[in-house]
Image (cartoon, rainbow, N blue to C red):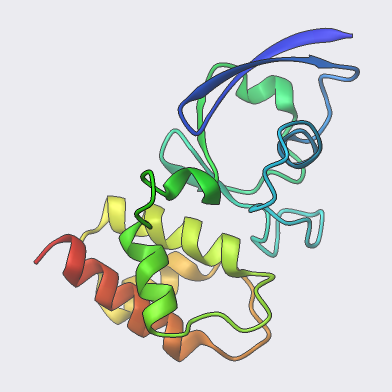
Length: 156
C-alpha cells in the first residue's frame, strides 16, 4: 500500500493505492468517483479516457497513477465553474454534438486543450487536434461546428 497525492479538479487528494502502476483512469473512476473519463480501448487509442494533465489532453487508461502524483489533473467534471458549463461543453449542447456519449468526454477534453493552444483554429487544425478521439456515431460535422462556436465565444 502506498500513499499517493493527486490534485484533481483543484482539490488535493491523498489516496492509498495497492499498486502504484494502477492506471490513473481506475483511480479517477473507482476511488474518486469521477465518471467523465470512460474506459474505451485500454490502449490509449480511442480517447474516451482523456483528462487534462497540466493543460494537455492525455489518455488515462495506461498511465500509472504514480506518474501523475502532484500534477494538475482536470476531468470533464472539473470544467464546470460552479453552475456554469465550460464554453466547449455549452457549445456541444447547443450544436447537439453528442450521440451515444461514449466519446464525448474525450471530445470535450481534447477540444478544450486544442482551444487553449490555438484560440482560433481553422478546420484543418480542428481535425488534426481531434484525431486522437474516435467516434463512430458520425457526429463529426456537429463537433466541428461546436468547436468553431466555442472558439468564437471564448475569443470574440
